Length: 477
Image 1 (cartoon, rainbow, N blue to C red):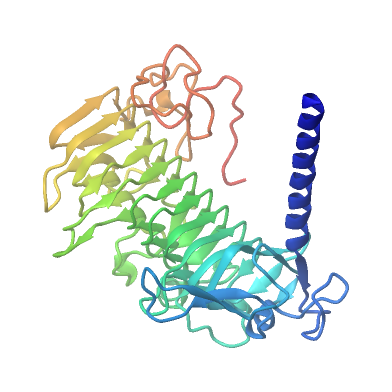
Image 2 (cartoon, one colour):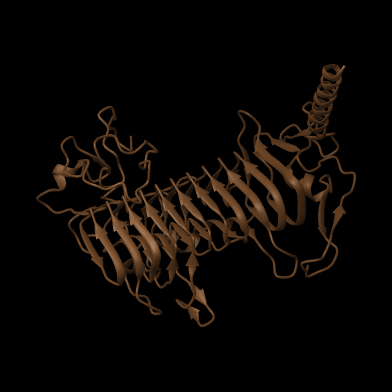
């Protein structure tokens, strides 16, 4: 009888779990939006789709929440907006090919993510995305460009995710697998277009935002991140005239991104000094007086230019972090190929490490060659910094308790013994002096390709772990 009761209880628990799963499945609905064949009077079904995303949002078809009072305080409650509307938290809006207008929302806090995604095989288009004071929105697989709009777009940034001082914060937003650009083809642009007509790609001025696997091209600034706890991962930024990524928030991770092709220099009318990645601190006394903390820069590739004959090529600082302080940073497995002194530079680095990075001078012209540099900020000396297992033309390290070991300086006599196919392939050659020459202490347990370390008797120096089975190919084929 005791065993039977146990079976009955187990069966009851299984039935309850199944009912909960069914309930969850029933709650999550899918709707379709089709600019070509849809109608605002449709029901959003696969056979009777709505017309555009902008119309769906503006017509109140999404139930969400907003603050009862403004500006919201810590104890301000949220109240339902558009109660009973068909689209609820957890639902998916499938976008079909065509122009959907813009995605602009404010005051839209969902209990779980509403997903806005390209329907399989479709290429939906938006002019821009502007998300303020919102939570739990997920955008996937869309094409976003002001060039799609029939009228000029005032926004200076194509995708903007922001807090608002009066209407409230934004958080828990995801943008992935999307294409973000000013124009699709900028090959005819001159310096003026790159400076004056480009939009910036992505602005993240909110917390807990993820920007993943997007293609950003032909922009002024690639991405600017002032929010905290952001994940900026596996994006490509190809063609920019200011900075690839500005990373100013705390607790952020930037990993496995590719940033390349920096255009327009000061001699061509651009006053911005361009960086692949740039950071600086802001404190009570202004720029350079605060801290940027707990940042990971891992597995990124920075390439100044891929076409040496392009007359608009500009010298690009690789990773330029000045003025700090920069506290508890991890900089590992990055590749920096540039025509500038600043390969990896930190002015005011504290309790941090720079490990297993590979640098190369793109040509023999000034400015350059790139260095790994750790030095003082306007606030203090750098201190408690580990610089280890790196390949770089030069090193310039100063401060308190700076550890400098297992690094290899690259010069004309050894560069062709180290790298397989420079300047764009920095994988190690068979017999390279960098193989097994590093130490495992505080080294990453994977290389830039996410392949396990070590593959030999020791950790290799640089971003790549040597592999006999690795197939070499051109990045630009």
